[in-house]
Length: 267
Length: 335
Image (cartoon, rainbow over all chains, first blue to last red; front, side):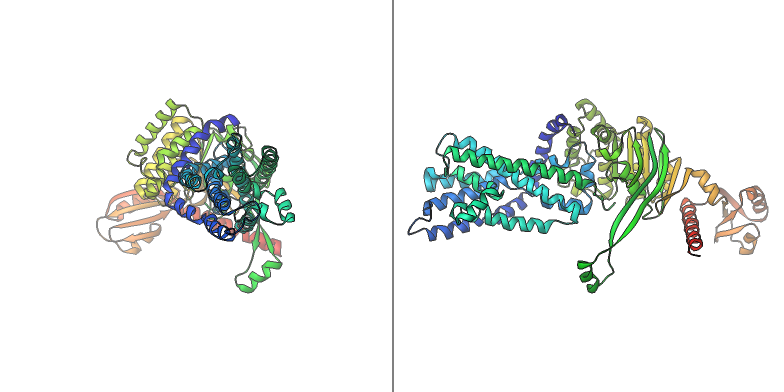
């Protein structure tokens, strides 16, 4: 599909994604409830750190960290893996394939279309975080703000592209929902969602640096809460975008190969 | 316009008997079987032609349509649609075709059809003026005015199918693939859809391939039919010629002023039905005039009509013939 055609149609796809998110607002609220794990972790870790800091985090630091985690999770969420699985199994992917625009762009737009609704949930939490922990809740240096946006975009792209890779596996193995379950377990443990990755043993922190999960949640949260100096932030940002490129290439390759096997069941 | 040569589409399917034991066994050892959905068919369709694909369930009609629209990659053979190889799914190709499947939908489920129309306008890059003209035309012809602002999920099946068809025509495709477009619709809605599709193809010179289990759809829309059975092409030609070949006998339907004895009818031809006020006879075509004159002189006839056998019966006979032929070939190979 031509890039020109895609660029021209993308705003309409985004508008439809937003309209659908509005239509599914009840479901969105339930999803938001299912992402409240950071609040639970915040209660646990602040209790543990009440008497003395754990690593670089005191109780206030944990509050700022986990409120930021909640905000980042809202803004980087994607569900394309379940969508693709469902559409491959039902054969409804066929209707997307008939249009002169890659379904991957359509999935991206539908997932991004929900972001404004999620911003409405995330912003009050971010404001609350500033009121509670002060300047620790947001970047303290001017460069932190643009880099936060770049890391949020990178985090969303890694989440979305991993979803596409796993969803596309349904074209090879009939259903890949359980692969997504495995991915989610690793994500919860290794992304910084349940504890800051710097608190793990050195071998785990080293491993986490080379896996994609930290760059979905941990890095944007660390940039938001001002945990790194500029050189370290840029190094981590480079690693994040290498993962974006790797997963992007993998997603497109799997998608192209998988479509040859698409059986368009039903009808 | 459409050229298909030696098309084959074979699937490898996991075969498993029912039961828990078989389920456990399939964890370690899987048996596969090859299903020949389409097995070497060839045909050509000229621009502007309307062709009906007929065949029993599982014959390979829908698979052929999916290959023609680029959804499936053929296992073998050469397929071209207006100069394009469908499996390449080029933008120019996708802008020329549409596929409506009665059991699949492209309408956005929670949004009104007008949103899908607008989305298709953007995706197919339809100029605003042409879009407005097309939508106005579709709304008027398909009587959609009340429907396009309601969420799709609140529409009835018939209303939704009309909107599906309209959404698929926003970009004015030149090739229409319709798979069971009237499935589940009531008779008046079927008539509306048929007359609309016919008017569209005539007005835009569009090529149509239609599959339908409603023979009335095929009879009303398609001067040419292609019969596919067990993945093979068993007939390609005019509808009338098929009827002449398979069931040349005519049906003579009499309306009777008063009841007559069955014996008086059997002397005229094979009795298909006999009611107190009517009777239907089946007679060879060369005997129609003689039968009519004998009936008029011997029966209290108030009205009569002569027709071909119903298409459903013709098709059922053709499929039975094909099945018998396959069984006989298999028997010869076995012996």
